[in-house]
Length: 82
Image (cartoon, rainbow, N blue to C red; front, top):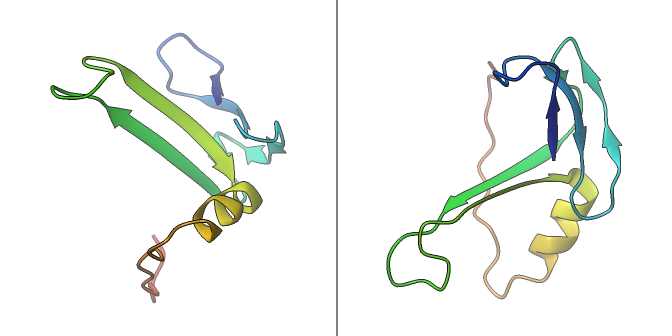
């Protein structure tokens, strides 16, 4: 869950893991640790037509979630982080 300092959602104040409620480190509007942001807009042919869901997971909760996948996530190492 993202908490912003302004109504325009320009300056990030805090991020809380939706699963375990851990407060992630945020400094000057930048998340300073691993965070997974999920965002889905459901379209036709779903039970949630027109709904938008978003959530944040700390790295530990993300690891627990993907550990239960029948097909592992695809991983790729990035040499240069921007």
